[in-house]
Length: 368
Image (cartoon, rainbow, N blue to C red):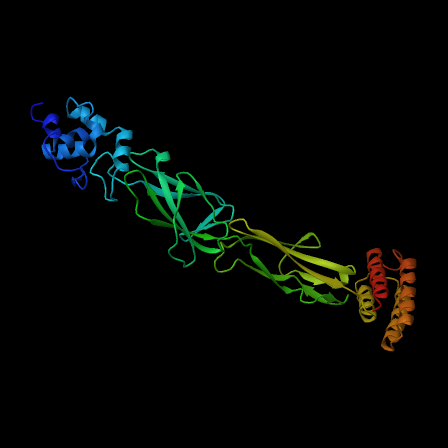
């Protein structure tokens, strides 16, 4: 064609061997046919010797040659035969593929830091201007903390990455995508793995056992640690009922036996745990006497004769306890119980009587 180097002359214009014959050509953002028109006969001859499939059968003109050169199978064949990692001169594939990591949920981003959990899906994504996604692979390396180096694992585009076995804290995922012709520069996706729920620390209740005339409270702190995603929520219950941090615990109003404070805390990734604090309420002869006096002051024992009778029994029980005469003490506490049963709902408030009965029976049973 006028103004174009002839394909026929290019085919036979040089006798240089194929090995080491690759020619560096400036890549230009122009259509392939225009690029071919700009080359001299020597460059076209090198192209046909490096990619002989383009010359069979001989192309009628440069438009046909450009069409053949852009066929995916032809480009793939040419790239497979390269003996160097340097970019090919073929402008069909001027750029390496670009990879990224898609982070699913749960995740939490704060201050530029991405937190992930053990179940967070991590998916490889890579694209190229020329190659299909399924013709791209990605080399992957996972490093924990300050670790460096290590081997890459080649994975399919779209594959998932597991962080199983990695410790909580910073995790670095190194990625390098490659197609048949070009390889991407290594780049890193930084994450923070958080698989641990927040930690609850109780300051109150401080004792394992409280007497029935003592006070305590619910007091705790919640922390997700320096490398956690942060506390997202917290709640507290006392014996299964909603409670609050700082709430007073008045043993006078609690039944004898075990009681439980439960704090449930979750972080921003969804790691959640419940931490319990269990304590026991148990009366003594002395605390029972104090309880009775308080009940009288609160109007819960309105009948003075009932109050005096109950008090006499408890004074006697305290005297026996002080002398170490525990069987006698228990008999006197038994008499106290019988008095309560007789005056329950009459000379003494029903709920208070039931609670005092429970105190005395638990004390007798425990041998206190």
